[in-house]
Length: 323
Image (cartoon, rainbow, N blue to C red; front, side):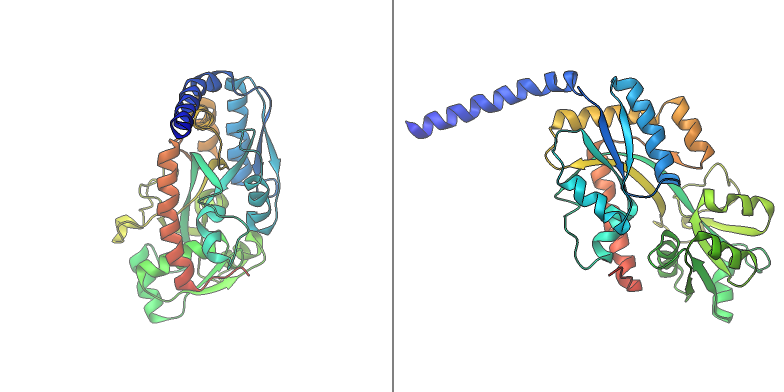
């Protein structure tokens, strides 16, 4: 009898929870929501976070405010949010680095990206573009392969394990020719040497390179997205040039600590998608060469898994270690 009574009580509790979830979605939020950005102010991460947060604030009737917490390649902020109350009032901007690269680049992390967080919505992608110094006789990947077969080709990046380093190591796996990495202490010095012809090639998000492409000082030879990007319509994708399935971009999405009620996750996902698809956000993203997404939690979770598979292979093949 006691066992039967316990089962009955559990069933009643489950029913009560099921009835309460829709009501929770309607009444939540009742206070401001903190959106942690695990990087210093400036750059694409903050543009995406602040643009979406402002629009979500307008729609939800509560402020969504951005809190920058840089350090440790994003790991410091990720650990803090992993331990936050799972009530939906503390979120973090997930990123290709923190979610898909760091788990394989660091020998040990103080949290599990797949167990300690819940995906909410992929917000935006910033396409990667591959460029060469305009004086090189290289107009596409076929030419780059031919040049690398004749002589050593040097590519610069903003440092070991930077986005440009990872993206070019990924390209090396695809085109199967050696390219020699030259790490710099930041994007500025790296670009100075590339423009001066002291290195041959580089990869970065479109915004960082666009002015030099437009001026003719750098030549874009491929973009990492599966489809051509509107701002560079004449530049073919890597996949178009004979490497199907190739995809790389900087991407940003909403995640929160595991345990947030499903109704709250659903509400956040819907509000994020509505914000991303608004005219104001689309225009802001377009100005910074970002592509808005706004997908569901299940779709974002599947995307993260795919990206983890992709970048685990790249990190291990290139022996990239951060510690």
